[in-house]
Length: 105
Image 1 (spheres, rainbow, N blue to C red):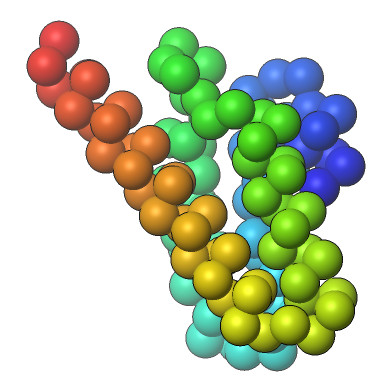
Image 2: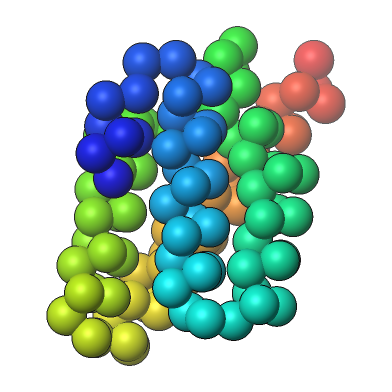
């Protein structure tokens, strides 16, 4: 979360964002989930932080990561799941908007 807040370049933001998601998957102790998250980050992570387009609001994104982390640390699985799902949906919406903007050009 701190690395994302400090990140100054799109590449640094992508790395910090990917690391957060992969670490959450690792913490779940699910090899399958971890493999899928690594693949997802490799395929879609760079698109989320394209420098030429409207990247997600870094502060808002970091706040969402923080909320997920706090829920996990508190052992509140239902809140962590809900927050993670909302975060994932926000990312998917951003990617769809980006795709539509690029294909309309």
